[in-house]
Picture: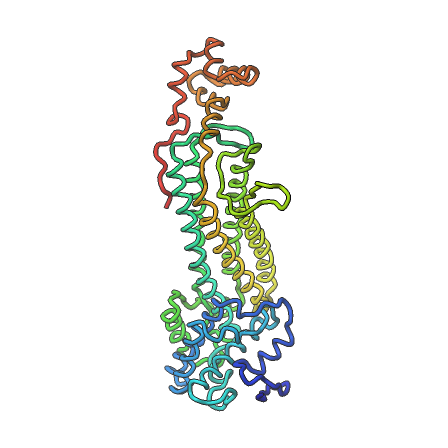
Length: 467
C-alpha cells in the first residue's frame, strides 16, 4: 500500500492502482450509478489526446521539462491504445463539473508516466498529477473539450451505422421497385404506390438525418481549451491557446478550433443541446420507421402482412409458431431512451450558473448512451431485419386487383363525382371497379385498364438510390 495526501488528509491507496487520493475520495463520494468512466472509452481516449496536446504545448512554452513531457505523452499513448481504462473508477455521475474525472485522468497518466521512467507510483516530485499533467489546465476547459471530442467520435460511429442502414433500405427499394401495393393514410387505404417507393422514402428520411448530424459534428469541434478556470486563461502561459489547440487537432484527428470567446464557451453548453436535439430527431424518425415495419409485417394471416420480416427467435413461451418483430421493438426502446436522455441533457444544460455548468457529467453520460446505443441499434436493424425483409407479393397483387382505391387515378379523366359513384358501388357490390364503371355506363373495361397501369398509378419510373 502507498500513502497519498491532499489538503483534506491522508488516504491509503492500493499498490497496483494508478489512480490516487483524489480519485479515491471521488469513489467514496459518488456511489451513484454503478457505471464508471471506464465504460466510456471514447471519453478516456479524448482525455488522453487533451493531456498529450497540453504536454506538447507546455514543453514548447517552457512550463514542463522534456523528460516530463515525453513520459506524459507515452502514458497518454497507452490510454489512446486502450490500456489502463479500468483505472478510471469514478462514477459517471459526479458533482464538481467533472473534476473527479479530470483528477482521475491526471493521476493515472502521472503514475503511468512515472512507470515509463522506471520510478514507483506516487513519485510526484518528478511528475505530479496537478503541477505537470494538469499544467496550464483546469477541469473547466479540459473536461468540456474531452466531452466534445468524445461526442465527435460517437457522431462518426453513428454516421457509419446510419449510412449502412440507409444502404440496406436503398437495396430493398431497388428490389421492390416493381411491386404495387396500397398506400395508407390514417391506417386506411389511400392510393397505390410501389413497395420500392415506400422503402426509398425510409432511405431518404435517414439521409436527411445524416446531414443534420454532420452539422452538429461541426459544433462539437469548437472548444474552450486554454480558457482554464472560467475562460480568462489564468495560470496558462502566453500563447498557450495557439499552441495547444492546433496540436490537439493534429493528434486527435478532430478539426478542433478555439472558440472566439473562451469565457462564453466555458459556460455555454448550447452545442450539447443542439446535438441532443438532433439525436432526438433521429430517434423519433427511426422509431416511426420501426413502427411502420411492425405494422407492415403484422399478421401474418390476420394483419396487414405487406412484408415478411426475418424470423429471429421464437415469439412466445405459450403460442407455438409465433414470431414477433423483436428487432424493430428493440430499436423503438432505444429511441425512447434517447428521447428521455434529451430531456435530461436539456435540464442539465439549462441549470448552469454564471461562468460554469456543473452538470456536464450527466450530459457526457447521456450523450454517450444515446450515440452508442443508436449506432448499435441501427446495425442490428440493418443486419438482423432490413436485409432479410421479403415482399408478400401474392397478397399485394390480390389487393391491388380488388382495391377501390384505384378510382383516385380516374379523377382527372372522369371527375371526382363519377369516381366516387364507382367507389360507392364497388364497395356495396364487391365487384371490381372496371366492371362497376362499365355497368354504370361511365367507362368501358378496356379504356379503364389503360388508365390503371403501374406507371400512372405511382407516377414514377425506376426507384433510384438516395444519397
